[in-house]
Image (cartoon, rainbow over all chains, first blue to last red; front, side, top):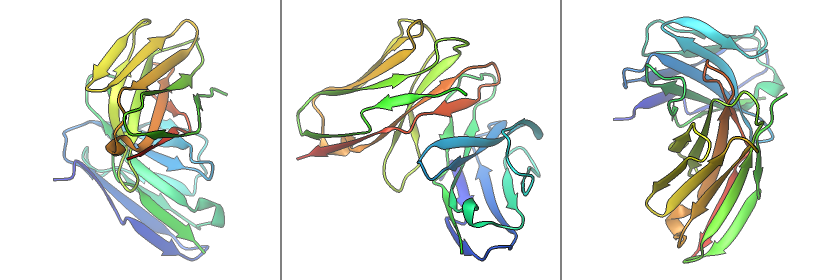
Length: 114
Length: 112
């Protein structure tokens, strides 16, 4: 069983479209994250959700919106896609009770905007 | 802007060689230092989380040390094997929220 799963793994779309990437974790964690791997290969945090509350939003354009229907899911919606949104997006979760705990990552979703 | 620097960017070694890489991070507001191993087409997996100055952690042939006062951590691999080939990521946590700032990683290739 995959602990943190993301769908789709690959997404190719046109500029201006709206798309979503889904993330689910079956680890019972209560903090989930979205990271973007930029063109320089850095993993940069986009959002963090703890018990369905947004606790970090790192200067991400408001075209990006995280949605958490429950503790096990954190989906990423992107409106009006731009060429610069092309990247690999990683979902991650962290065990409850410790802000120093390791992150558990999904396998990434590669978004290509044409 | 908080930066995490890793060196070298890439490393090619022969099977059986021992190797080490460096992670440099801001020495103020230290909370935790993470090391992750990231194989191609897979997801990053945690190796170590270190929180105390002078910490040393070991997992099999891989070990890590931490110096929070000078802001660096070393990762050592003893007797490298081809299956050790991966990118090794370092991440620094500077606050109680646990937000991790990642370095670019060191890509290790071990030739049989």
